[in-house]
Length: 343
Ligand code: KG4
Ligand code: ZN
Image 1: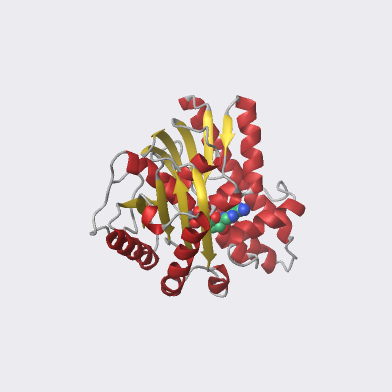
Image 2: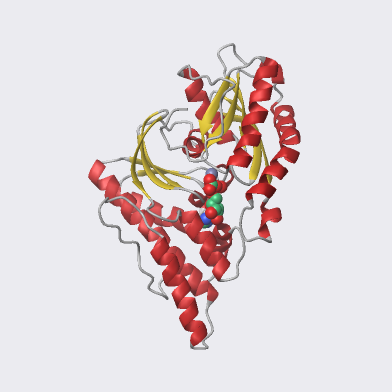
């Protein structure tokens, strides 16, 4: 380790994953630990905030200890403590923020609050050491669907967003309606890799008037629910795989078409995917096809870096650290924090 190296301990607890990681120079994960609560929330069909908060409290100490141990770096040798401070669920966020503040205070280390979406974007910096801004990034998670211009490290312009449901949310709701359970995204992805004709049911792609690059998925969700009702009323059996594949086709083609429209208008030559839905195999394949046709370079992180993790938070924090960003012990949890907004 050289004197110039910057080693950051990062914590993420904005939803249902308690995660900690140690990241060097924004690009190298020395360790990464994720404790998922999926099994706990499964029976409720979605994340129960109160249960999530309690579980974070239980897990945060062992998860952070494990990340520090695995990294081989002593806690006292960390250059900064980073934590997701928003957006997300307020209770879960508060657990991470309070924990990070305590460590920073006890060790007298700088504290850096990180925007969760900024973290998702930064996962690409760990996965692709040669990737540098500017580039376009499609952020598709359970809570967000944003088309972002990454102008520089920590500098973003959101050019498109969802008007209603996020892409991951649509996956989760449709999966629940067809009995696949929570979390729906990976289940639909898995089912459709083996079965289902994506062109069997012509579901509508979102039409949004006004802003060219905005998305909408609630109409599609309603179309799927109507289809299920109609089939049930007619007493006809539903082919779950065909339904899932057709839904997925509509979501993915809407994401691909809007993104490609922006790529052409703005002349982007590099596009990154980020967020939980970025691990979707159909999205990756369709986006790859579209990018190849246009000579656009496509980047996406490995699945473990797409869904919530702390490595991405440690990466985003590094660039803030280098700019001199430091937060005080009054750092709070900001459930509705907007990308680019400073805390
Ligand atoms: O980024 P993430 O872990 O958490 C948020 O910040 O929201 O994203 C979780 C979302 C969930 O809606 C989940 O169903 C979806 O990402 N997801 C997927 C896949 N893996 C996770 N959606 C489609 N295909 C996948 N393979
Ligand atoms: Zn996330």
